[in-house]
Image 1 (cartoon, helix red, strand yellow):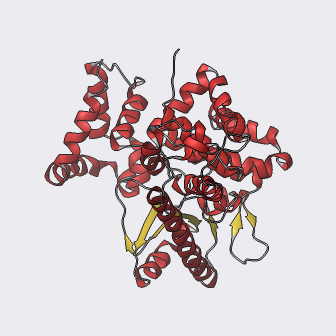
Image 2 (cartoon, rainbow, N blue to C red):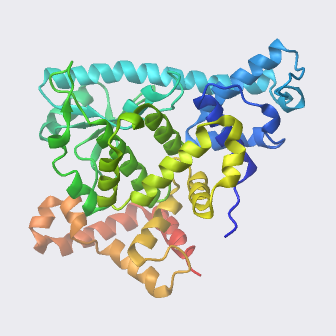
Image 3 (cartoon, helix red, strand yellow):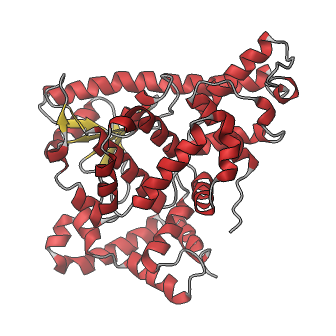
Length: 411
C-alpha cells in the first residue's frame, strides 16, 4: 500500500504540533507552495487559531532578528512569505476565535444559570470541556456549544430559548435541538447522546447515561463524566463522524491535549474494555497513538509522519481529506457503505438496495423520529406517500445531488 500525505497537510500537522507545545516553528520546514494552502486547510479542519498562534511566534522572531538566520536555521528564506499582509489575515482568524469564545462563555454561563434556576439537570459536552485543555484560551475554535439536559423539560427549554431571541433550526432525525442567534450563538441542546439510526449499540450503552454522571461540587444541577467516561464519549463522538463520512485533524488534537493532562491518572484498562464494547477499539488506539506520535515533539513531527505504518497512514490520510465536517457527498457514500457493505465499486443491486432503504426506512427510523407511527404502524403507508410527495416538491435539488453521490460509488 502506497499512501501519501500532501505536503500542505504535513505542514499543517507540523504547525499544530508547534502550537500545542508553544514552540516556535522552523519555517524552513514549510514548503514553498504550502502557505497559500493553509487557510483553506485550516477552515476544513477548524484549526485556524492554532496555526495563527504558531505563525505569530515565527513572525515575531523574524521581526526581532531582521530575517537573519540563527544557529538553528529558524529564520532566513523560509520566512519570506510571512509578510505583514499575510499575518493580518491570520490575526483576524485568531481574533475571531477569541471573540467567539468570549461570547459563547458568557452566554453559556447565563443559559446554565437559567437551567439551575428551573431545576433542570445538565452537562456541557465535547468542545465546551475540551477547550480548557488547550495551552491558550482562544486556541480551540468553536462553531457551537453542546449541552446534554433533562429531556422531560424540553418544552420549558424551547420556550425560554425563543424568549431569548433564539430561533430553532432542525432538519431530519436528530437527538438535539439547535438554537441560533446573531452574532455567533449556536447551541445544541441534546436530549440523548446518540441516535438509534446511527447505532443501537451506542444508544443502548448510553441509555441511562445520568446514572454514570458525577454531580458538580459547585452546582446543584450540573453534572460531568469521570475522566475515563469523558474520554470514551469524545472518542465515540469522533467515531460517529468518522463512520458517517469523516472527522478532521482537530479530533486528534483533542485526544492529544486531553490525554496529555489526564492519561497518567486514568484507568486505561477500563477505557480499553469499554471502547471494545462499543466496537471502536481499533479507532481509539489509532487516535491515541497517532496523536502522540505527531504532536508530542514538533522537532520530530516530519520524521514521525514518515515512520507511520501503512494502516496509520491510511487512517490519517482519510481524516485529513474529509475535514472536521464531511461533505454531503461523503455522508451519502458512507450511508451506501453502511447499507450495502461496499463504499465503492457498487453494483446496480447495491444501489437499488440503498434507494429502497431510503424510500422505506426500517423500524429504528420510526422509533427515533416518529414514535407515534412506531406505535401505530398501520399509518406508515400513508406517511410514506406524504413523505415522498414532500421530498419531490420541496427537495428536488437535494434528491439530484444524492442520486449523483450514489452513482459515484459505481465501479
